Image 1 (cartoon, one colour):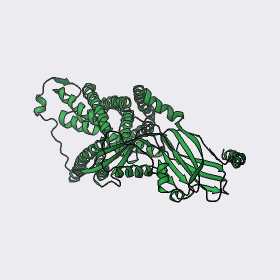
Image 2 (tube, helix red, strand yellow; image 1 turned 135 degrees about the horizontal axis):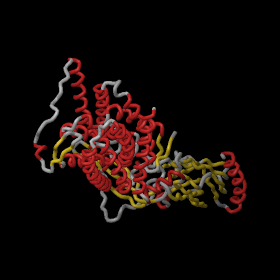
Image 3 (tube, chains in turn yellow, brown; image 1 turned 120 degrees about the vertical axis):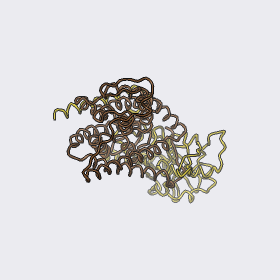
Image 4 (cartoon, one colour; image 1 turned 90 degrees about the vertical axis):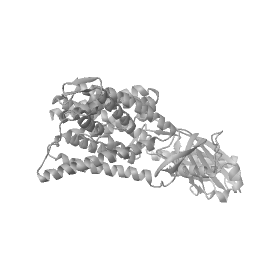
Length: 249
Length: 304
């Protein structure tokens, strides 16, 4: 399996490097485009590789963004000696997965202003608050969001993680943690020369539940009462069964 | 060997879960109570989200209860009439409990309520059990084992709708067991317990039932309360993880059978001493989690 993957990569790199030289562009591929969450899922490591028509000093930044949606940040305060969740703020389009990788420090590649405009960097993403709700000290909440997402490994910033080879090839790894959310992941590969974007490539990764685990999840969601009844019957049968077995022992 | 839990949405070591299930089954078999109220906190310590832990433990409780009732039934130790009255209350109570559960989940205070109810009840039960077993051990050392009064009359016996429970040799108001059933049902749904540790003392001290019937009858009603909780949690909150519950129940049914075979070898009061220490330790751990300053006062909830 592994050997096949590498062979596939070699052949691909060989052909695309010709193509790239001709058209002054960047091409990339992923070792895995469909990630299946099965019963033995412990996370996934995806190899991202490709070729670009580069010069010395060129940079590559890869931004992988997972499905966006509601993420709530909660704050705890001490009430009668106990830490209780007292306040919360809703972000309505926060990415539930985010991975930013680059070949060197992003601050050396792009200045702050460009980072902000092109939404590169953990704090430069435009994440909207739920409209109609006034939020005080917004910066504190946003920092808490970033901090907690980084801690859960759903967000990550990996500067210096992309290796460049002879100004023609690049390679990087993406880690999807075991708690990853299902959906479509957008992969953006950006090629910079002197802080100017000269080419880019888009790709997608599909993360979905598969096999028994997916079946169980779907049944629990769509036929929830039947699922509950089945869970009870199963427990009754096991209880009754062991009684029969152990009576004979 | 890791296995991905489809509802908890995380992988967990299956042997660890199996071990925990077996261990708690052993305790259940040895002491007669103690499945859920230790199992749910341990699941939470292992990182299972509290709502999933509560609902899945309710599901797994059905199995050892069925198996337990069958063996008690054979020995004639189940009062089905009393059990039915209790479970009517229990079914009503657990339905109320699931509604409260749903509401607390919506306002985001579910974890807090689950954890603090555990602290309160575990501390209470743990210290009662501890003092009782210590007392018994001390009295036995002195060579005196006195019996308390078998039956006491108080205002509870003045309530209306008196019914005769032949098996338990009782003539009491039907409201009392129904009320006990409701309270236990609510707690069962909220905390993921069978409620044996509340209902057993209530049957002995409040109803005055003969001790020989207490465990079998409480297990009988637990089956229905746990089953009702499971179905309602599944349909209302989608929090029952059947994979988690299955691994737990496989361990626990074996544990119960093995445990119940050793009840005559090990001394009950020493067992209870160990169990109560365990309960107090679990409750202390939960309490410290609630009162120590969190490593981050902010936390994040990602909607699926």
